[in-house]
Length: 349
Ligand SMILES: [Fe+2]
Image 1 (spheres, rainbow, N blue to C red):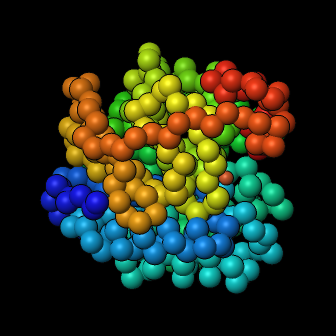
Image 2: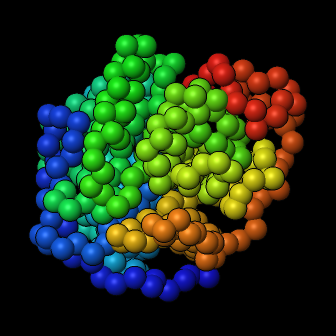
């Protein structure tokens, strides 16, 4: 089932990224941008059949639609494979060529996953941005802000590094200070989104993350962040959590092998599926679609600025699969431990 797109054609944005600071300056050809369309995925860079399938589906999805997209948001685990440096041919085959530049012709704003920290590839991913300013690959620093469009933003996205155990404490605190400062500024955009690799809440294999709930949760709440976008678990999820204004979307289906759900009492949607998200923002309405590897819309959600929200389309969420000794992938959880309890030790699995 492929659903008809209901939204009108937007003006074509043109992007210029400033690489020297934590703000991506985005210029557009139109001063009166009526809407912003974004794609999002995480956990994609394994150079395997899953990545290739999702890349192909993304192209077809954009070609079939009647909208122009402003950007792709990458929620980390960009490269599971080992890179030798910024000149490694895998940059060409796994990114530049894999995501058809004739169709997906917009910036790919990237955040760092735990796998990106292996082999010092975190630094390579930032360096590649600097030495290839013509590339769609954009990671000007470990954390940065993207305003879309820049002059009168409809949405501000904070691209963040959630790898607390993998970075020096001073770096983590610097990011926290920066994020607090940015969020405290007068809000220009209608919508604010945070994008990072690790979830605060997840029905998937890694479960909830008490570290991020404690560190970032107060900012999400205080500044009424509208969306928290992440990956890490290899599935597609939309969670509404009592007491939280933010809607939590997990888009870890970019190509890596999927994992089963461990929680099924929370929703409205969680499925062990490869795929991606499609965000449509207008000043008053945000519409999010979770799309599977065949281009089918599994779940569609609308959130209005007046506080109302509703699920427009959905399919049945997966039933949770109990953990077994073999299925445990986290060293910090005992067999049979509830994944709804906050993790307090490790983010790095
Ligand atoms: Fe991953």
